[in-house]
Structures are given as C-alpha cells and as structure tokens.
Amino acid sequence: MKNPTILAIETSCDETAAAVIKNGEIASSIIASQAELHNKYGGVVPEVAAREHVPVMTPTIDLALKKAGLKLKDLDVIAVTQGPGLATSLHVGIDAAKTLALALDIPLLPINHMEAHVYANFAESEIKFPALVLIVSGGHTMLALMKGHGQIKVIGETLDDAAGEAFDKTAKLLGLGYPGGPMISKLAVNGSPTSYNFPRPMINSKDLRFSFSGLKTSVLYTVQKIRTLDKKTKANLAASVQNAIVETLISKTEQAAKKNKVKTLMLAGGVAANKMLREEFIKLADKLNLEYSIPPMMYCTDNAAMIALAAYYRIVNKKAKFTRNFRAEPNLSL
Ligand code: KG4
Ligand code: ZN
Image 1 (cartoon, rainbow, N blue to C red):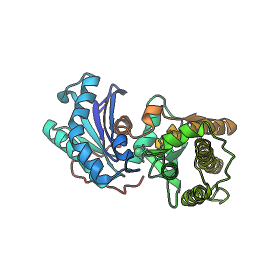
Image 2: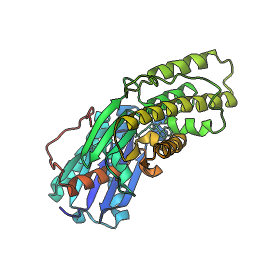
Image 3: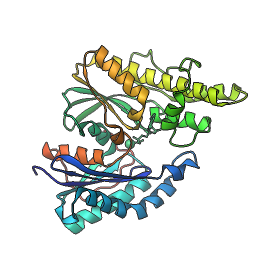
C-alpha cells in the first residue's frame, strides 16, 4: 500500500479520539475528553470512562471523516489502539474498529499506544536516526532507542510511579483536581522552584531507571506539616515538585545520551506538554550538540492522530501486521 488513507481510533483512557491521514498528512484529529467528568473523582474511574466512550465513539468518527472531507468508502485502512491502557476503555475503540473494518472489508491494524506517542514526533518533521526518546505519560516513564521505523528498544524504565502520575498525585494532594500535570505547571508559574528541596529519585544511580513514588511521599509529609495551604505556598510546592521531576528526567536523558551514540533527542507522551520540560529538553540537546524533536502541543496528550501516524509509517515501511483477530492488551509493552 503506497499512500493509504487511514482512519485511526484511540480510546485507551478517558479520551475518545478519531483521526484521518490522507496523502501522508493529518487531515483531521478529533478528541472528546472526559477530563471534566473524572475531575470530581480526582482521577479516571474505569467503568465511567468505558460507559462514556460508547455514545461518543460514532459521532467522533463521523466528525473526523467530515473534517477530512471523506466518506467511509474512501478509507483504505482502519487503525486502533490495542494497548496499553484501561481494558474496558480499549474494548470500545477496538469493537468500533473491528465492526468498521468488517463492514467496509478493509484491513485493520492494531497499534501500540506508546509507539504512537513516539510517532507524534513525525507529525511535522522527519527524524534523524538513531534517536533517543524520553517517553513520559500518565502510566509510563521510559527511555528508548529508536534505530529506525518500527525499531524502538526500551533502555530504561520507572520502577514504580510514572512522571505523569507524580504530577497527578501531587495535584490531588494540593486539592487541584485531575489531570494534575497542566494544573501543577500553571500554578508553578507563580512559585519558586527552590522553595522546597524535594528528592530527585535515583538521580545519582548509574543506571537508567527512574523511581517517583518517594517523591509523592515526600510531598505528602511536607503538605501535612504546613498549617495553611495558601495560594503562594501551593505555587511554591507546585514549582518545586515540577523542578524535581523535570531535573530527574533531564539528568537521566543526559546519561542515556552519553552512553549511546544518537543523532536526535525526542520527547513523547502527555508530560511532553509541560513547558519547563520542553525548555530544559531543548537546552539539553543544545548542550550535547544534538538535534531534537518535541511533538506539537496538541499531539502530546492522548489523541488519534499519533495512532494514525504510527499506522502510516508501519504501512509505508512494510512493517504492518494487519489482523482482525486480536484482543485488547492492557499491559502491552513496546
Ligand atoms: O500520554 P497521556 O495523555 O496519557 C497516558 O497515556 O497516560 O499522559 C497523561 C499525563 C497525565 O499524568 C497528565 O497529568 C500529564 O500527562 N500531563 C502533564 C501536562 N499535560 C499533561 N504533565 C505535566 N505538565 C503538563 N502540562
Ligand atoms: Zn497516552
């Protein structure tokens, strides 16, 4: 298949998303977020998420097609997130994708959500391989080497919490709601990053492993000791936590870049939307004299355009394994 028109579907967590790639370009990307709904629970409730995906799925697909100026019959391939993610949420997207592929009699391509996060980098630019990728999302924190298309190897991972989780849990402790990352970074603007000295977990370990659960505990103890959690104190806490997370991520990325001969530093995942991380990542690439790539903001957090991109590159590089016979894989690894 030379230049496939692809409809991609993503429902791994609390976003119902559909996107279209046409002539190698993203023609539409629609995201229906449930964040507001989960905000009152302080995190995503799986049953609620799955139930909400169902009525929103078809209108989201319709809108993605309409925006791309296409009809169902114009599609060559359907791509869908297979995992990792919440089982109940994944099922909704997979069922929709299987039904469409069967009805239209076109190939179906299951896609790894984490690979797709990496492919968000290909929305606007080509990447020089080999590349080192820092993948930071709500459920994952990984360093990986990408030697070419479809060749991504994990070289470092978190032992416990993910970086996004550290943002989310801190936000919860500060009573900021969900998702925590954007709220912490907004609050951090008015705070001092050096007012609290939170631990930089495993920053001095000679390997590429991360650990963020101790940071969360340290924030908890600090908050418990504070009598009045006023606006300024919250801002200082947010700025200090953000500083600790970003510094740890950048330090490990630097270690990995020095250990492996790479041409490009790539950032991926929802936490890549963090302004401080984006700035520090660019500074690191400049310091190491490497090229860098950071996804456009709208393709950092969960979306279907990245699923479409991962599918597109798999297909044009003849690495696509089309099948209608697969199940949701909540723990799918890279
Ligand atoms: O990749 P993603 O959308 O979903 C998963 O695959 O997990 O990542 C979501 C994570 C959440 O933990 C959220 O708090 C974090 O990304 N996030 C941020 C920012 N925007 C989203 N973290 C820090 N700063 C942000 N601006
Ligand atoms: Zn994600």
